[in-house]
Amino acid sequence: MKRDQNGNIIYKVDEHGSVSTIPFLGGNEIEVLEYGGAIGINKKGYEYGLRFIQYKGDFNKTSENTGKVTTGDASEYLLDLSGNQRWGGLVLSANIFYHKEFGFDVFPKIAYGKKFEPFYYDVSFTSTKKYPSFFEKYFSTSDVRANPTLEPQVNLCATLKFGGKHDLNTNQFSWQLAPFFNKAYGKFYSHTYFKVGTETGKVDYKQYENLDEAYWTGCDIIFKYIHGDRTGFDGCFTIRKTRDEVHKSSFAYYAPYKFNGYFFFKPIKPLNLQLWYTYYSDRYADQAETYKMLWYHYLDFKTTYHMKKNTMLFLEVKNLTDFDYYVYRGYPRNCRQ
Image 1 (tube, rainbow, N blue to C red):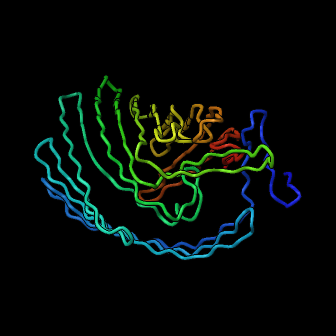
Image 2 (cartoon, one colour):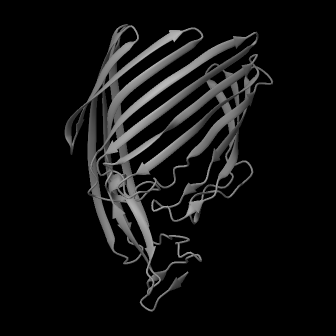
Image 3 (cartoon, helix red, strand yellow):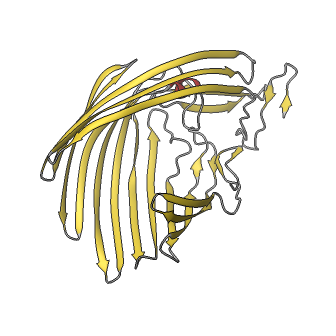
């Protein structure tokens, strides 16, 4: 890794001037206490409940460039009172949130579903709110760059589910198509644009927090097949488009196509063998759409043995082939574990 005469890092770039890696040389330490609980009542025509979550954290961060140490503590709690009422296939529900920092909010949901064997459908319209935690405020992740000024993100979402379940002698096959559309508002999302200085060769980045024109839309294709009671497969293929219209860019790291599913086999009744397959298509490594990450896929394996009524033994191997795949540029994900 090269540095200039002042000790600043000169990042490696490719022939197009794109940043090839963003190393983090600072340090993060955090101690977190999280606790909560929920209580509720569920009757035939209605249900409601109260949920409580409390977070406390003490942390310090060391800057990768200046060496400056930032320390702090955070304490936040969330109360969520939920309820719904059913009239046949119609469901009306709402959530009343109380957040320590942001106060009260009410979010409704309306849904309608119907079965006509062997098919069914369900349509729903809902609004939700995602509150930024101190992790998003003070610690960078693959989706969000740390920003203490983040505000709650409001999501308006419409979803249609249409599917069926079919019995074919000793075989069972079920499927579902679930198109969705989500519009987001607020300053929760951080749009980051990396640029290399022509004279210094150093990386500079600009950060945006506007989500008022951002949305994601797509469809889940879900299917499951069981042959007898010994073998089968279960999977979900997702088509997704993400867009930030203010900056005319996509949400980085979100693959437009992905698949996750598994084959299972039960040679004897208490033993279950599963081979998982995960696939992600090409996706952008930055929100400015200047660099694309290649597609990747990997395998996981899991075997479970039910020894007694309340005893289970399992062995799990992640990334079975020890494949070096990259969720974002310059940082390979977990090797075989």
